[in-house]
Image (cartoon, rainbow, N blue to C red; front, side, top):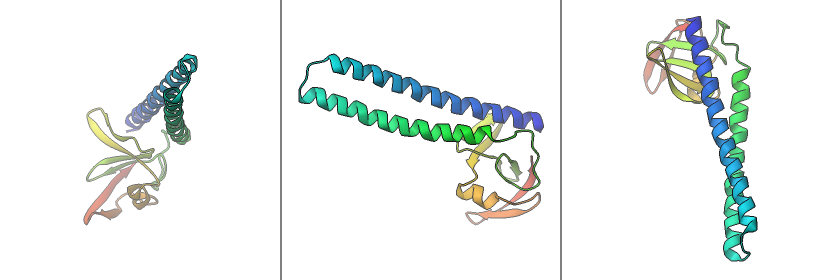
Length: 150
């Protein structure tokens, strides 16, 4: 299961890195657009175009900050650790699904096994936090058993 967890961790690193790279490319494109807007004629249309570009830059910059925080959170995880209690970095096997307590990336499939990457601060992450093997928790009136913590 250690190899599986390392594969999962590496896939998460790659996924977040690709998102960061995509936003960085979009920001570069917007900087180029501002340069070309500066060379355009002045007037209301010109000012509106610049304002729209600046607004989009602010939104992308905010997303980039969030993604960099998530990347840093992920980098603090030791994928080979095998905790006894569920915490950040735990791979939790339940009678329902696998959960990787890391960052909110959604479903990732490794070796044909779906794993849900969730934040420790999410409602599910909080309900799992501190639990041990063979403990259970209730979610949406359904009792779920923790089979293993990796």
